[in-house]
Structure formats: structure tokens, C-alpha cells
Image 1 (cartoon, rainbow, N blue to C red):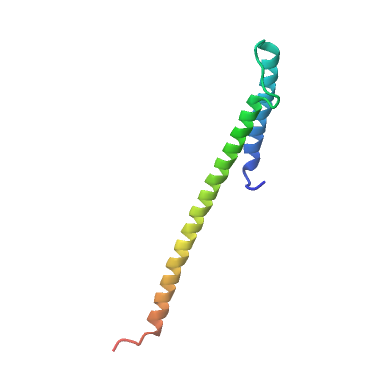
Image 2 (image 1 turned 90 degrees about the horizontal axis):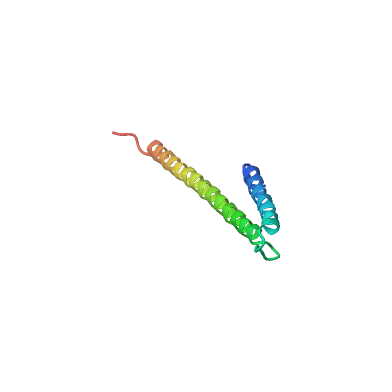
Length: 96
């Protein structure tokens, strides 16, 4: 798993894919005019939804990580400026 909270996401999506397989089977047996492709249109759509949701999930996590890193970088730069100012003050000549 790439992220610690991926397990629940994948379990939910797998449950939806399994539910779509059962739904497709029921549609084949109960609806006389139902004809789906070999792959199964419902399963295909659920697979595409899984990919889209995972991509969105990964994108949001990546955005959050970038925000945190930008904040850390900004705080580090501020600290470096403060330390540089303190160093300059210590090295300057005392007032006359």
C-alpha cells in the first residue's frame, strides 16, 4: 500500500466491483432483453470508477504533501533569515 489509509478505500472499491458482478449476473438471468459485452459494462464502469477515484485520492494526498513541504520550506527559510540576522548583529561593531 502506498498510503496508510489505502486499505479501506480498496476494500470499498472491491466490494463495489463484486456487487457489480452480482448485479450483472442478476440482470442476465432476470431481464430477457439484457445483453452485455463479454467484459461486462457494469464491471467495466466500476473498474473505471475505481481508477478515477484512486487517481483523485492519490492527487489529493499529493497536494496535501506538497502543502506541508511548502510550509516546512517557508518556516525553514524564516528560521535561516532570523539566524543570519542574529549572526550579523553579533559580528557588527558595538555602538559607540
